[in-house]
Image (cartoon, one colour):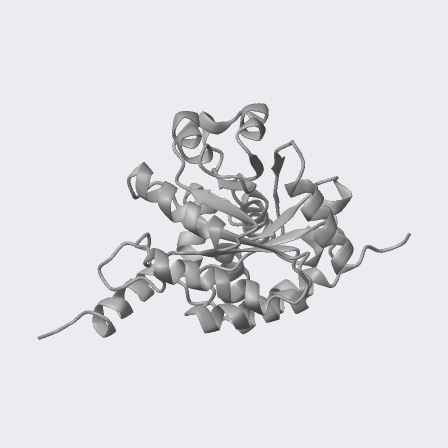
Length: 289
């Protein structure tokens, strides 16, 4: 069977992005999951930043993973993937110059598309991880990404959080990313179709939504009519893998107490040990006069 090249896959993603339909991503986190997703007929996959942090570091999503670590995992996936894979490239691992390096590494890894978000990362101590950088800095990152890209088939998607600013500010922000040349706009925090309609009517590029299975946005036909081409429902496959590993090893050790029957969410919290990171942040990042 003939294999698709990285450029073939990028062209496939471009065709998907230019279509009139809405597609759902498969969560791919290693070569096996990428092969399974393609074999099951998924049109597109995504390597999530939070999932990469769990898979590579066993650490919570505190912007701890480095570009080189993320790119290594993307390369492993890109080596075998036969479906387009979107990389959640977080904030580009730094400023606009770091974004340029991110583009170079992920393009070489075989990624078909990637998102660069305007979140202020790493989060400042005592602040939520939803703070945004200025629009000017966000525009600079998109322009830098486009400058660094060699293969024009690879899509650069600007991502923002639509749930934390007034509608008019999100409209202005996304329109400026569109004018900067972003191939698409990705939004997290869209509440419902009324909210989406307010945002979508001002944009002409394809849209991508991070919905996490929001029941108020479960209508593919309506999403497609509003320009949404890709939705990310979450990373259930990865968390199912965590749960299956735990249950298999627990059975092997014949541990059958009720207290040991943890959910995937509880397992993730238990084994990433977030309390240690919170304690370290309090000790080393808090300002002491």
